[in-house]
Amino acid sequence: MRWHEAAPGPAALAGRARAALARLRESLPGERPGRVVLVPWGPWPQTLENLLITRMMEIAVHNDDLACSVGLPTPVLPDHVTDTVVVLLARLAVGRHGPFAVIRSLSRAERAPASVAAI
Image (cartoon, rainbow, N blue to C red; front, side):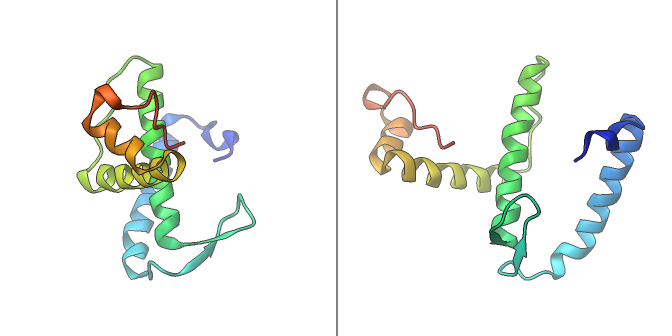
């Protein structure tokens, strides 16, 4: 989002977000998950499914960042969102640190590495 788009204030911005959500709820169910899309912020194409999964991850991570930054509890996201994000982050962590580092972190604190951060 461009910062000037928020200038009319939070109510107007929330209204635009609700309108965008309504459009997506109508249009996304008819899309093929494997459809290739070009993203405006990079030179590489992605499948629609991967694009949506990475956006869910960003929303989940930044949702937590924002809540922590203002001292509020992190809002709960739907289970299907958190499940998808946890799987993505686990796969990224395995790719970065190896499977047993992640397994140990989740099952054996005494043998866990200091970090298995995915990103």
